[in-house]
Length: 349
Ligand code: ADE
Ligand code: ZN
Image 1 (tube, rainbow, N blue to C red):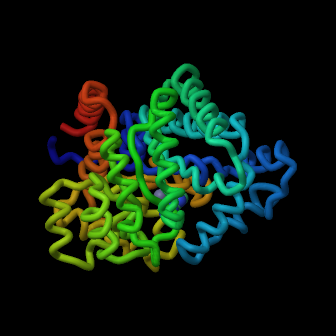
Image 2: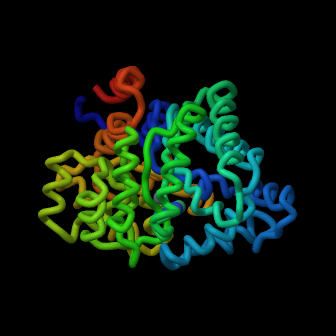
């Protein structure tokens, strides 16, 4: 790849046109567009603390990860039936198609709805229907990663792993992860869940180093054996960890706008992304819960390009990393990589 630089409009077109993959977007928070959340609320006879886009924007203001998760739990209480789940998955597909995201791995956190008595069977039925609509109507391939709510008791979390195993043949569950509150909830507490998931052949990832420190990333790597880290932005505290992540080529699924909105960093300029890249750790860009943070994957790429000194080729490289480190079949990955490279080479000589 040569060193030419595109004009701003051409780079925007290039970012749009590249066939993309997103690896860090939550089914529940990622579907909480005000119109859809309000539709779910009405269907289920519930009310929300907002009534339209404007009041939702005022409600979607956060000062920490923990406070965000509280708001997430309230908003996601509208998600109850197979129909709700199918519509939520389909909204992800529509948003993916709009950005030319061809394949996405979507986190599903049953812990967000289980305590309200939403049956797992309804979740699975909705995921299967949404996935079918995305493939048939929107040309988008949807895979799922079942995330364990870090705050669950171990026995309940183990149940969630077993439920994920039971649904594998019905929906494309490619992996298992960990999310929700981080500080005060060590990943190693759920080591047995990761052992079981691994023995069942699931690929492994975990949210770590978002608002927890570098020790939280060590915990996920050493006790849970994860292959990727979701966020991981606090790794910069620890030189030895940076080296290990680079040597083992462990991908960090970084979500810059989310980190800013949850006050993980005081400004985008203060984000650790340039240091992670300098340490030669593979990173990709992601939107986490786009409607709650007013972002999407293409916006993440544009914000990162505008904020830091990365070259356009580096930004394109971050998008390529997502394809390379995805949990999809090798032949699908190779086909998408060669299509990606062909389009990239049209823009960069
Ligand atoms: N669930 C949804 N978004 C999350 C985030 N950013 N961190 C942890 N859990 C989440
Ligand atoms: Zn996340």
